[in-house]
Length: 319
Image 1 (cartoon, one colour):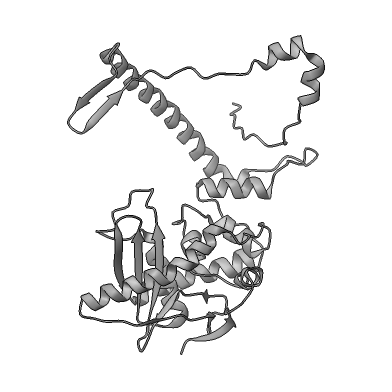
Image 2 (tube, helix red, strand yellow):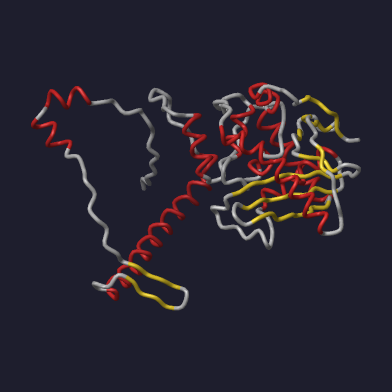
């Protein structure tokens, strides 16, 4: 057995469970570290492990996610029985910890009785429009490989219940190359970023931007200018991308203007699977703050609130 039953989660308070999860990398952390989770970035994982993110309080969404696990597990058993390969799932009730790499943790949804296998239960509204008939998002595969890396098990099932459509079941078999590569990435993250307190490189996601704004909300205006010599290549690449972005933006506007000139006072045009619209939009009501301040300066002052300070990013080239 490659793992130990580290923490008994049965009856464990939510805040204690969150505390224990900071002691290592879990299944939902792994895709974020690889930049595959659109809901979480590597920087956010790092901040979480350092205790610099606010704790997620118990709420209805979290409770629903836990409660629906049993329903999905039941549907999984029903599906596998229909396939002629019946499975029995059991709750683990432990945070598992890899013996060789103790920073690798697994809080698994279910284990398969009598087999070296487990089950991950997923519920999705599928707002991103993923086609679960043909496969899963990459982040689900990474999570399954992480659990196999922790436990040493040979296979992992992922049961995805798509709202109003039903269940899709995927079987991921152990792949030593994938697991070795994932373990190397997680070990580098833990030893370099967490233990040596090195901020991960941003991945370009909105979540990474949110994390940076939380980490550095206000600038120290007395701090000396930062030497960016080590980032000469990044600066040149950014300049090139900005130029391309502006050119593409103008080209986009040009095409939109072409279609507007074709539609004239029409509202819609079509060709094949393409649809172009130029519809009326009712004007919105707006409060004239300048006029109100001029005519009612006393009242304006009573309701005036100071906004929260923030930061604005800038870039300029001095030749």
